[in-house]
Length: 410
Picture 1 (cartoon, rainbow, N blue to C red):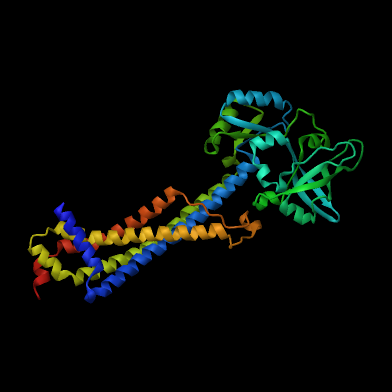
Picture 2 (tube, rainbow, N blue to C red; picture 1 turned 45 degrees about the vertical axis):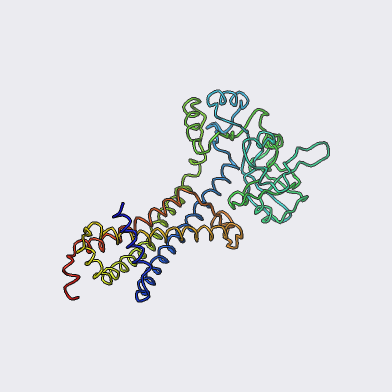
C-alpha cells in the first residue's frame, strides 16, 4: 500500500509541477484536451448514428409492425382462421392486423402521383402498429355512409406533391381494368388527414383507407387480406417468431420480420457506425501520441529526481508505474471530460434540431440523437486503453535506465 501511495503522490506532483515546470503542466493539459476532443467527437457522432438507427426502427416497426405474413398465392383468403392458428403457434404475439394493399395512381386536379394504398382495420391497426401517433389529428379513414364520401389519408409528402389539403377530393385509379369496361376502375375519396412519420420513403408513397373500402374497390372477398401485420412482445426477437411461423405454417405462407425486410438499410447503418468509430478513434490515437511526447519530456525533466529515488531504493517497476499513472490520469480525465462534452452536444442537437437533412436523401428530415450507455462505456474504455498503450514506451525507458545515468553529470 505504501508503494501505491508513493506512485500516486509522485504522479500527482509530476502533473501539477512547480512554477518552473509550468510548461509540463501546460502540455499535459493539451494532451488531456486532445483526448477529450476525440472522445467528444466519438460520443456525438455515435449518438447521431444510433439515433438514426433508433428512429428508423421506430418508424419501420410502428408502420409495418414486427412481422409481416403474406401468401405466395397473392391473397390470404381465410384470414380469420389463419389468425387464430397463428396465435396458437406463437403465444408471444400481442396483436395481429390484417390489411389490403396495392399500387394505385392518385389524382388531384391536374396532378398525378403513384401511391401504395393500404386498407386497414382501425381497431386492430391501433393494437399492432403506431399509426395513431403519425396521423395528424388522429383521424382514421371512414367508410362511405349513405351519400357521404369515403375518406383517405395521405402521407405528408404525397399530399404536398398532389397539392391536396384536408377536405379536398382525391381520385384513386386502380391499375386493374373493370371486367365490363376497357377503362381502369376509379373512385373518389375525401382527404381526412395526413400521415407524418418523419421518414420520407413512407410519407411520399403511402396512403390509407378502410379495409372495407379497399375490399370493395379491388373486388376482394370480405374475409380476404393481402397480408397480416404481427406485433410481438419484443421487437429484437421477432425473427424467432417469423422463423416459427415459417416452419409451422409452410407453403404458401411466408413470414418476414422487420430486420429481414430492411436488411440492406440496417446493414448499411451498422457498417457506417463501425467505419466512423474506427476513423474518429484516430483522433484519440493522435492525442495518445501527445501523451507519449508529454511523458518523454517529463521523463527527461524528472531524470535527476527519478535517479535519486532509485538510488534510495525505488524499484524499476515502481518508477515505471509512476509514468503509467500519469498517462492513465491524463487519459481517464480526458475521456471523462470528452464524454461530458459529447453528452452536452448531443443534448443540444436533440433539443434544438437546428440541423435539417434532405429527407429524400437521408429518409428523415432532422438529425436524431440517441446515446446508449454501452456505447459510452466502449468509447471511454477505448480512450483509456489507447492512453495506456501510449505510456508503455516511456515507462519502459524509465524502468530500464540506471540511476547512475541520471546522476552522472549532476
